[in-house]
Image (cartoon, rainbow, N blue to C red):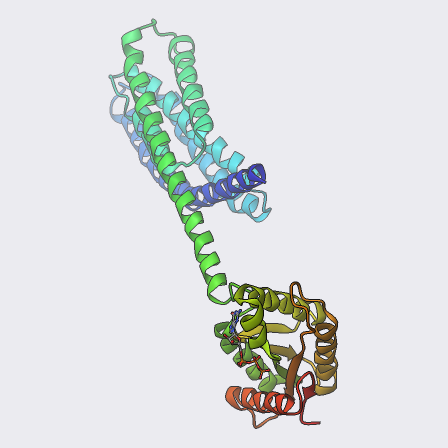
Length: 368
Ligand SMILES: Nc1nc2c(ncn2[C@@H]2O[C@H](COP(=O)(O)OP(=O)(O)OP(=O)(O)O)[C@@H](O)[C@H]2O)c(=O)[nH]1
């Protein structure tokens, strides 16, 4: 069960991360395109005005490649999201993040031929640490792949002499960026954990506020909302609606002779009889003490009488634990009319219940 909970939390957390990334990565390609275009313009301009760019063509290619990658990614992103596969969307964003890091490593390698300029490397890794949300494992993969690529590109492809001091800043950026990414993601995970706990507690509290703790039936607060909704529904659709009030007979005798705990057990057992003998569309409410209400939507009076008769007989024949005498219940049942409101419907059912009590109990009284 705990494993299942952890798995579902992980799945929900991944979805949360990917959705968060999605919003940001819908904008990032535009920013990247603007930056690329600015550098592209500078690149073309400096080509004419001065010739200090050792790798002018490589720069040009890099800016163009980044523009194409950004456009392709921006076009693909909403399409992949529409497929509804979170993992695939996650992979796509991860691939783009890696592409950005590799581009930054390429750019830094080219820049280093001119001056000690690590801006692209530092900026991209730190940017990814704050803007891109992923697992620690994936972030490490990204940082290591970028680092290895940088070394291969700078020392082997560009054929520079190996220099450890040149690598130190890159290592430092990688470490700092990883540290920032890990601590930010840990904080976010804690927040999500806390908010899901709060959501759960809130749901529980909401549920408890409408339930009777002893019988677990709905309570009067729920009746107020539910019955009003059903009455409104009746006024719109004219679908029949019935309401029954019942009260256990001589309940005080149980408390007085066998104690309150036995009385409580009797209420729980009766609530179970109510649930077992009603339809799923009916709603049972503990109205107070040993008094209960049954709301029967889309039910006419004949059918409602049949339901409560069934409950009455089931109660009469039920052997209640530790109670040596039979327990019976009296009912008042009524159906809604166009003149009714919340109070008149309840009052009429209550007056029928009163009649049932006066007629000797263990019976159903309705207007029929
Ligand atoms: N054990 C227990 N008793 C309760 C609870 N709520 C109300 N009661 C008791 O239910 C009894 C109701 O007694 P009465 O209103 O005199 O009704 P009755 O004895 O059922 O008599 P009739 O309704 O006239 O048949 C009282 O003794 C209340 O204290 C509860 O949650 N648990």
